[in-house]
Image (tube, rainbow, N blue to C red; front, side, top):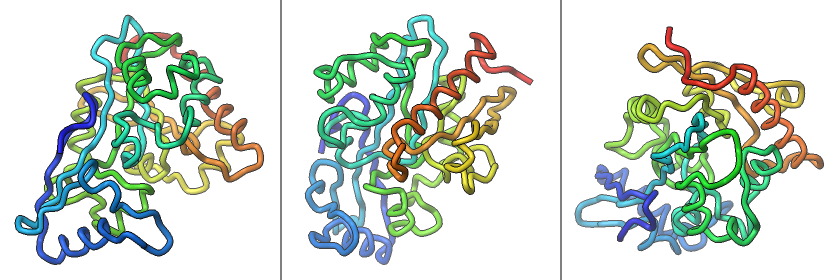
Length: 267
């Protein structure tokens, strides 16, 4: 197995006998009840080694090296989607252009025509080179490292630890990412991730987002970063879901513009 693209990396986790049996059975099940099968992604996104009791898998992270003079904005998702890994680009699991990119365009955080945005390779290069119009340089990262169709599958696979053995230093890994990339702010698209990062409850956050912003702080060494929670990228649990997602992002952008440009505040 090779990395699907420049933003993907291969990781290898070694498991106990019982852990491996659970994981291997889960991934190989071609006709599971109540969820999609991971079996078609074995060989591209996952590889199982029965002798070594190990799983190789791919993660994804897109952090432009040259921000082109713009302040950086980190979009933080729970974990990668197998189809996005297979395609080699975040949020390309849907046909056409994924909701996230249309939402970012609607609030003037991003630009690009449909042809460019519907091609994973073109979209990836567009983001890495920061060639889109907008006030920020956008980075994308996952809080948890193992790809699944839904974050709840992480607990089904790895129980409370959420991560596979050898990759349970989640907080240390995320601190390093933020310290090295130094975003102006972070936008979380998952309530559980918001709680892990800020220590603040996200309970009922989709209701609170209708009235204003949901915000917390994340401190790395002497720097405090603003963290905003928004609706999940493909959230559709309302007849007016598109407007609600975009209005939430607009409110966040307004808050970011209020503080002007520059690095996060040291304290």
